[in-house]
Image 1: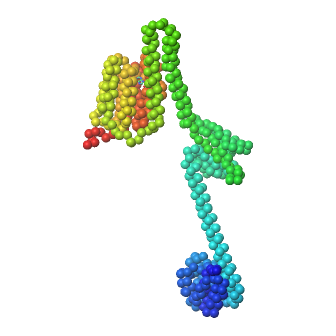
Image 2: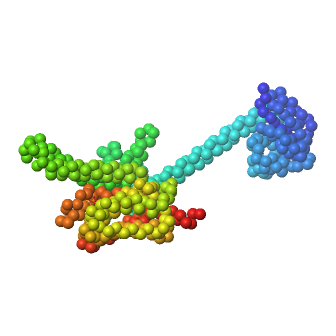
Length: 493
Ligand code: ADP
């Protein structure tokens, strides 16, 4: 069995061949050369595990040869064979990284012992190198893991602080420094409980120092009118050793506001549904009890009112469905094709023709020719129906209403105006709110559910448009909204 490859460099024929014979008997593969040049040619063309170098060679001296071999960064163990090793030679060779010396004369056992030792050294060195590389790789992995964790924590919107087992701040993200108004340098490695023992953060300091609390503690705090949810969670090593705590502070103001808005919406909706149902129920009870006698005529009025409330209820349910649809559909992107505006406007005007006549309202329509708007046809119809419907509903006989559509840069501006009842100045900002209806003697008899304008606003905003209202009580109102414009028809050709 081969023990490995050995290169012998010695100019003395007897020694060179002697060494080769002894080592070959031991199972080594041996290459024996006479000169330094031959030696370098051999190391450049073959791989060796051990090199035995005679110090005195005819062409290159042993130290220079050793230097040349070492410069090739081979994984090889080297030994210097020398007849008169002096201290300078030993120092010079050691400096060049020689592994062993074999002084002449030597016995076959000495030789075999040295070569075996050289092999061991080489193996140990190889293993050490492998370990070093593995260690370096794991350090690199650790560093990249740390930097990944850091970027991850930094990118979080929630404020995060990691506190080590000594209670010192080990990591904070930008959101936490902003919330505490303390720089990262002033936070790192400082006692967390001390830093947090101020103002709104005191409950956090308490949660950190509460040694009895083993699990996660969650509570709310308020900072500058913002509601925050705090979580203080201990974390452990694989063998359940406590390593510290992770603190997160999340701004929940918006979530709270939305939850409150939703519950207010539901309360109002229940009220709006209950009140017509109650009215219809009492009409049915009057009928059931025959309270107005057995004749049908006295009930006609009541039945008409019940019918009206029922219609209102159906409309309300329709509006609620539209609202929920708009909410689930979200914002509409560029995938909507532009539509010509004029035909839609004419269709809506036609729809109201009878109603306008009955209400004695004069509607004027002015649409700039060839306009195209980026909106779904049905959505535009819903918007215009609501606004023109209101301009008639909240008007007086003999009053006027107008719809003007113009292009302005990249947007189309729609303006729906009326000379009707107008809106009280303090109510103007609220008219787009869900269920808002102005309570005035003049509007008491007008039927509605307060969702029309809320739907209009949501639809306009779906197409990245904007809507606003101006009004003067008793004189009239103007609603102006914008929509993205498509290419005008004449420029398309
Ligand atoms: P509805 O008409 O069903 O009550 P809307 O959401 O369409 O609901 O309108 C909300 C409220 O805004 C109305 O109740 C009314 O008080 C006011 N309003 C809307 N449009 C006009 C208008 N053109 N003139 C006067 N008031 C209006």
